[in-house]
Length: 163
Image 1: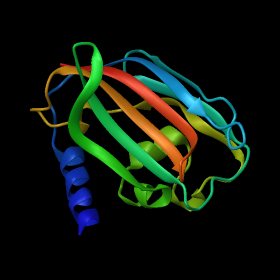
Image 2: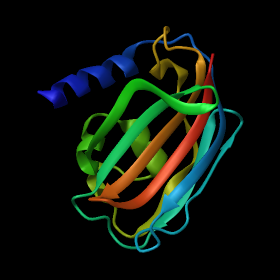
Image 3: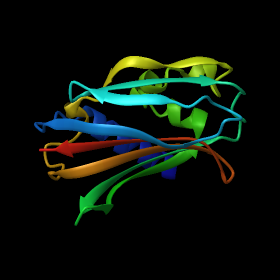
Image 4: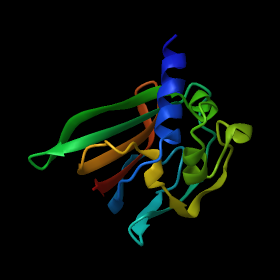
């Protein structure tokens, strides 16, 4: 039941044409596990492109989950829940039609969990039309984390303004 609701939510977010303007400010990698990945190189350029490069040293366990959340800023802290908080097994996440994450991460459903190798992208663009016209103007933090039980494999953050 919950998966059906999430699929509908994602479909609505992706299908509604937004009239908003997104500007990415910066990216960071708050944590990564040296047993599984090399230190990811991640940065923003041209205000709308995300560069990501990393190597998988050891295949992620099949029980790996992906957690994606978007938080809005209030008084300089990213604490405002936007309602976009999704945690699922990694390969199910890719099944949801979250193709832009496949593009960003450099692997897809056919290689999930990712086998050892070099992954990433050179110019991933998050399209403004992925958001609805009434998405509130604010500063946002998007947080993408890969975990196996309580062990963090890799965490990625981007910070952006939506006008």
